[in-house]
Image (cartoon, rainbow, N blue to C red; front, side):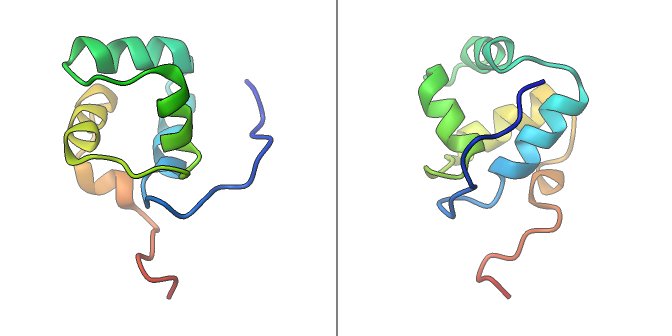
Length: 86
């Protein structure tokens, strides 16, 4: 399992949790992107990597599809996050 080289950004709240949950399930990023695409989201590996790194905004559709693939409630993707840095 690769270790993140760059610090997380602040463009979304869910990226860090998505990455953690995906890795806990042993799903490779490339495989996960393919599952997202099959579910109808137009996303490429670079864009997904930026989502996990919290460098870009995550759309509501992406959050919905990712939660379904990970088999968790959407709220789980937001665990431990503080939207305003509190």
